[in-house]
Image (tube, rainbow, N blue to C red; front, side, top):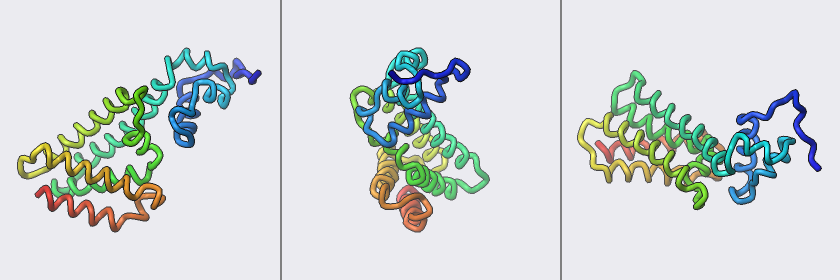
Length: 189
């Protein structure tokens, strides 16, 4: 029988999310269970159900934090002091930098596909994409086709997907990122 959490240290959502996050990064979604999370925290799996109704809800809470971070990066770029063209390029660089600096998280956000979590994760991804599309359109000097914005997003995603696991972070691909961002900017202008 596994040891239980001492009553002096109450189980919190943050503790559960922290442990689940570690497990989702090192294991496939299906190899993480409420029991494995509880075991590492030192509580009963039933105690986790007090905070989350299932593993997918924990996963979604983790994704929500990632998407919030990505959206904050986007907001900070859009609200920066640079001219619109520079902001647009910085959005592209910022997106790629986020993906390369947070490769495990990026995979969970955009590359993990599973019926149990697709509805939840897809909703967050769609909201983030809408924010991206609105920002790109707002910074563009001309009316862009939705297909152009979508193609730009896919090009950014493809760049991250291609370089993940080949570089440790953005700094290792900085020159290629800059070339790619300038190429996309030219394509939209």
